[in-house]
Image 1: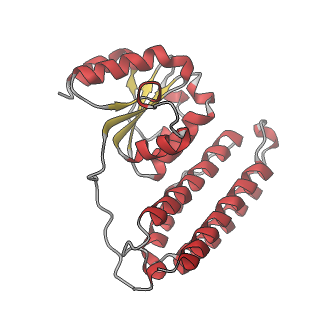
Image 2 (image 1 turned 180 degrees about the vertical axis):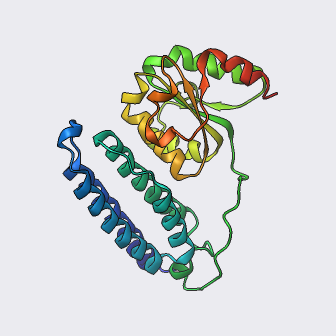
Length: 250
């Protein structure tokens, strides 16, 4: 494959990332009452339509179908918090696609990129690259409780990615987080009044959602009513009952 062609495709996708980031900045407000939801969602739909065409033309029908499914599965909520989450979700989807193209430019599912049309293939569940049973997302303010979860998983022989314990000096934080979410079977979110306000936790939730990971909310000083809309369909576990749940994972 010619490097110039690869660069053109990556630039086209990255251009759509820049546009979703600009949409976020245009409509985001810290006050829900001032949030123009109708204008925001109409602009987002136009962005989705344009991005779908870019992916179909530049990459191929298989990836376009994945993006179409991603667009159709996103819940439409209200308010600026949900808008930020929504934009991060789509941005993460495109980051995943860019990463996949860079790592596997000759993947047969990239029909138009490699110039060899093929029939769309089903997306495999599971991966030989899986390294962790659980990716643990948490606010640093809840690190004591996060350590308890990490230790409890270790006791039953389950591997867990926890940033404090798994990252090494010199690691590129954002790259390692994204790669580790992809390499984990499940993503557990320690949901607390602190993590709900954490931009990093929101980004990790969006990444897990975009990668179609099984997400388990763990409630700490929260109830199911406090879950952000992106997590309302996931069965939540109370932190104080988590040890019993983990013991059954043996």
